[in-house]
Length: 215
Ligand code: SAM
Image 1 (cartoon, rainbow, N blue to C red):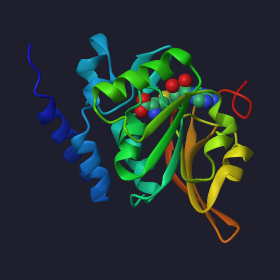
Image 2 (image 1 turned 60 degrees about the vertical axis):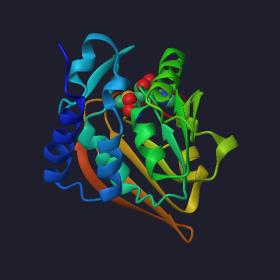
Image 3 (image 1 turned 30 degrees about the vertical axis):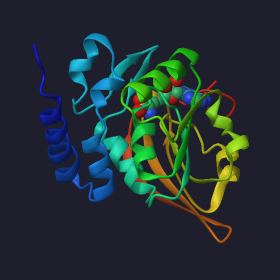
């Protein structure tokens, strides 16, 4: 059976993103241009444009397209930024961020997923400005800091202090914070030494593990 992936992708952008209020044309264009199906292997690939998270193995998921778009939009990227993505998973969200910024460091705790993210990014032709690291992103990645933007794709019990330290000034951090069942997306803005927090959507992510995550 041949699948018209481009038609599915365009429908996702119109119905799941634009109609729900994603307005940043750069985000919409990035997600219209990246072959999301190449980030999901095997029998789950057919679900690549579903309106929800999809299993990528190891008990983890590729996030709902709307959530990826909302998080990317909230970072207000303009093209010159260095971005840290915590929770690389399939690599898809890193690919979207890399289309919007100058460079992305994507960190993933599970070695097999870090390797999968690297090969997915290569297959999709979007790895040129992305470095995938295997490690505990709840501690950030000091060697690449400071970051103009940080995106955390796993639910945290609290905002990891290392991420606030590694955030540039000015800089923006988006992170789901809450309990294991439900979190609220926080957009934290650092400017002139001050931190301000805006509350965004209620969401449900897999847990952030590691030193500053869930034990
Ligand atoms: N952004 C991913 C994508 O586009 O496919 C989806 C991320 S998935 C919802 C969350 C990921 O965070 C999982 O792959 C999980 O292994 C990873 N993770 C959890 N805790 C982590 C940590 N402390 N450091 C790095 N990655 C972590």
